[in-house]
Each structure stands twice: as C-alpha cells, then as structure tokens.
Length: 326
Image: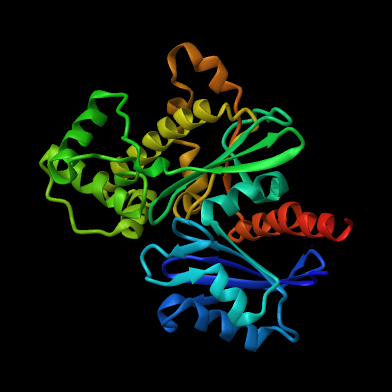
C-alpha cells in the first residue's frame, strides 16, 4: 500500500514540494531552481530535510511537455525522467503531469474560497470544465467525464493563432507580425506578451513610453500612472476574454471556465472591470450559450497540489487497489 507520496509543482524558476500521507497534504516547501543543477538534486534535498520516512511514490507537475513520462522543463533545463527517478529513489511509481494537466485535475476539488467569480452564472453539473491562463507561456486543459471516468485533456492552445475582433486589435497584431511573423496567443497572453502589447501600443500611437517589464506594466496600470500601461492591461484582458470564449466553445465547457497562471490572480478584481466578460460572450449566434457559462479566477496559490492529489487518488491509487484485489 502506498502511504507517502511526493507531490511537486516544478516550474522554470521555482519548484514546490510537499508530502502527502493518507490523502493529507503536508506543508508546501518552495525551492529555487537556480540553486540546484538537476531536478534529482532538489528532490533529494527536499526528502532529506522534510521526510521522516522516504516517500513511496511521486506525482510531479512540470512546466513543459510530457512524453513517455519524460520532461525537459521549459526555461530551466531541468530534465525529469520517471524511470530514472523510480530507480534512484526507490519509488513504486512516478507520474509526470504537465502543469496545466495538474490544474485540470484540480477543478472538481476547488471550493468557493479558492475562486474569484467573474459573474454569477452557476455551472452545469457534470459538464466539461476548462482551465487556462497566462504565465511564462499560455496553457489550457479540459476536464471531462468519459462515462464514469474523469479525463483531463492537455492542449497546446498557446501556440494557436491569436484572433482579432476589432480594428485596434488588428493594428496590434499587424505590428507584432512585423516582429514575430506568426502571432500566437502566448505572444500576447503571457508575461512577455504583456510587454509585447505595451511596446506595440506605444509604437502605433507614437508614444515614447518608458521601458518596463511585465510586473512594472501591471503596477503602472493598476495605479493609473501610465496611460500606455493601462491600455496594454485592458487589451490583455480583452484578448484573454476572446480566447477563453473560443476555448469554451471548443470544449463545450458549460461546467465553467477557470483562469489560472501567475499573472491574472494578481489583479482578479481589475479584470472584472474590463471587457473580459464582454469579449468572452461576444460570439455572434452563440452569445446566449456563452452568457450561461461561469468564469472564475483561481486565487489559491497552490491549487495544483489539489489536482496532484486528485490524480493520485483517481488514477494511481485506484489502479493499485484494483490490481491488489485480483
């Protein structure tokens, strides 16, 4: 029986680890990726410091594409291989999940306190749900039921072409096309994307804007000290609404759309004042369909650990129990 499980949410800058014992998640510890040359070193350090007894399994959320239980973390160079980790640490099993796959598994476990609602629409019970969000890049995943079995579908939506719904948006995309050629969703809906928006708007309007990074643009927009920053953040939210609405239609996500990532939760109250919801619903003949779909911002910082736990309980533990009962 698997009693102690190592859970982790590993990004390009920070890695967070926790131990789960009998379904209860312990304290979440933060570690800087730059402090460790390899993922194995960080795992070994966490286990040595915080595990009274070694964990017997691992479920790791990772910021990168997972193939054959293998992942090269985007933006850090850390390499994780499930088979290698199994041998090195003596785990009974190791499962690597894309970070948005982990968030997808969290959706049925989220509580009202985890959410900032953007509207008052109730979700349709049992219908597909969608989580998406801008951070270092742009991720999206869908949670749906396949008969009685839950399923999370991972996407590469961030690399789809960014849509325009107004002349202003067309001007911005045309400006970005000069720089990037193909203008994908994450060229705008990400940290660097907010910077791209800021510079594109300044160029289009002929304004000599001060050099700012994404955090500075956000702060200048929130305190109203820079008109270009205000315009960039407002357009960011409008683009996000349009993209979220498109993905909601793609997944028939009448169970709700949830916004995660490292950016939007910092200004959840502000996005409610922008055109996010208007753009989300503005789908012509399907306006009424979108109006009925709830949208929420996930404001709990460690919600991915909820997903890691649910994945383990639904997939790993249940499978192990079924094998033992034969």
